[in-house]
Image 1: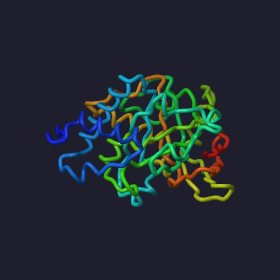
Image 2 (image 1 turned 90 degrees about the vertical axis):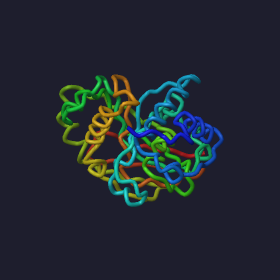
Image 3 (image 1 turned 135 degrees about the vertical axis):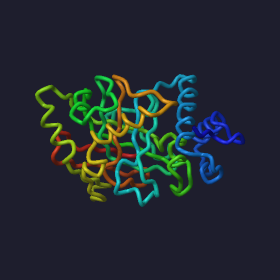
Length: 276
């Protein structure tokens, strides 16, 4: 197992990145500076950051998966998914965000439309996607605000993991609870729906569920399997939420913009967010 080089221990990385987050400042790429900084080390940093955030009163309420959308991999030179924790301080109901979502609260922020699950049961490694669907309590559509502690969004995959999975905020729209007799229809719809992302009333991108590792359930499956081999972080448990990754490209945001989505082929309404 690889570990961070002695000149920059895991706990110091965690402290430095938390300080950068609080001060809204960017930092140099760790993997460019230290050849030993790899994904395994980065997830050690993730665990160290979690301990520090919990010690100051924050509560983990789930995970976000990043880079599940294969169409954006060449744009960022990251070619596999990553994940990060989300906290009670970073997740909000979209309906409660009127006048509260400020673009200036994040570093080089971008917006991503995503599908969010809440788990009613803990998923296990080896489950297929139909079994994973049986673990889901509700499905929602939301926006994730992502941010980059690295200038101009230039980084490696380990950098993004250490930097909170690029997570800034998760803003969740209305929940749709899944009854037993609806599971077949959801199972068919989740890998097949389409979405349009609009800025100030004009369409800026069109996305497909299949872009996200063949669908949000496939993204969840990837996370479950990834966590099964993670010695630093626990598996998913009942009650956690999981944001499954952007369905379109991620776009820079500014105060005064209105972002909206329109969904076809899924029993969820589009959502809207005005940025302050």
